[in-house]
Image 1: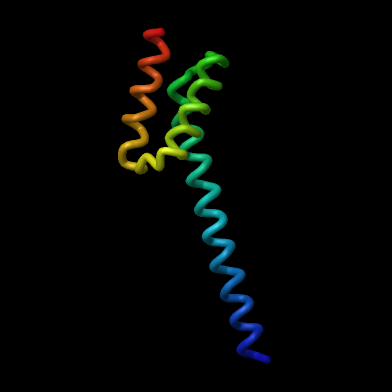
Image 2: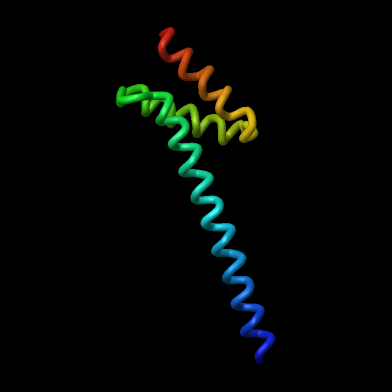
Amino acid sequence: MDYFIIAIATLSGLYFHWWIYARIKRWINRDLALSMAQDDSAKQAYMLEKLAEAQRLKIKKTELQHWLQKAADQYSAS
């Protein structure tokens, strides 16, 4: 019974750490996209759509900022 309790506590802790890591990563990416839109609400919506597209395309974290900056530049050119 002791091993069962230890296993449940360990698995719960691991799940919580994974969950908080994924949540923080999502917040960071969202803040990055919104920071490129300044105070323009239409551009903020556009950048959030582009962030969702980047996630669908599985853009790597190292390339995400450059990819979003290119999308932001295309918006201002439109």
